[in-house]
Length: 401
Image (cartoon, rainbow, N blue to C red):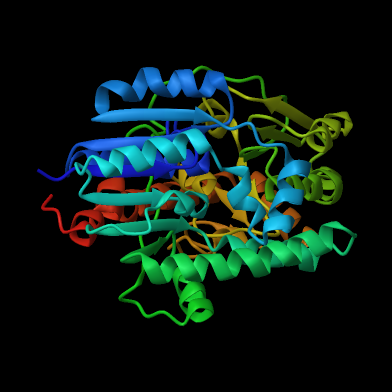
């Protein structure tokens, strides 16, 4: 009987951030194909305990180890050993021993690894199919960081990570049966970088639970102020999100408030960095920190904004907002991975003045904004159901659905 080993860099439960949303739905899809052994990491003991309580009854076996990596020490070790910093940050000797023992027993027939950091746990030799879900081309992300930040030593660190991690990604992709990416654009980029063909590189897109993210559901109201509200959602210790909200709060919101004096901006998401918390001192800006449910904030939003300067793959924050029938203003980078038509399903703009104009248009034309939101939800229902998006996993693993 087939059994699947699912290697994942953050325990998938709760699915409250982009990586865990994808890995949770992937876990559910795999569990429909065969019993699943999960070997995962967690950022802290509390997250590990919550995930164990939810997932243990659903798995053939479950092991979650807590990471204890020090970033400065990890950087030094990675440089000393000539390997990616990303790998060192997610290295656990205990998890590696568990994976080796599990595979050694001979019960595992298929392996799926989620996020490139987990490739280091793949066995050197394995007879069954191995899928590597890179999600994004992380090396390209670090290359962009290096282009954007010329400060030393950060620029050198980012350039090195782009180079070393890029070589590692290609090495892994040549070993496994198929490498997965979250969008056609990411898959095409990796094909170009690796010189691998579409038989070895596939796009498996993210989806959205349109039953959960449904504007018809009655939700508790949030205190959103008197004027129109723009909302940004996301993990707020993640650099692209930090850069996006700083730009919006400092440069875009003042332009909007010239036309809408009471307009406000809510930054909704867990673990806000100090730079993000400081934005709450600006007129009209609210920083919520972690919230139990992002949907009430989406319901309250007159516009959901995603002014990301750097974005890879498909942005879950946009899928969620569009499924909730909210009108969205996104940068071209944020909108790139989403199969939607600018001007019909969302607005796309890239400079501060254009983004401010788009947000003000939504504030001014409530009927037009509502129509766009309804078109966005219809698009999500037609195009982005999780079942359809993850259906190729069975075929790729050679397991009947």
